[in-house]
Image (cartoon, rainbow, N blue to C red):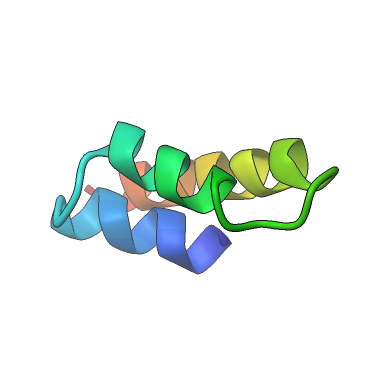
Length: 50
């Protein structure tokens, strides 16, 4: 999830909103918040590169 968040931030291939929505629809119930946090970590790391 971290790598996916970074990839989306660096490439802009899909919107961050679309990414979060897609991921939250596919992860196991009860893990939504952790996965959302992992995406945010990846996006934050990518921001330091940009």
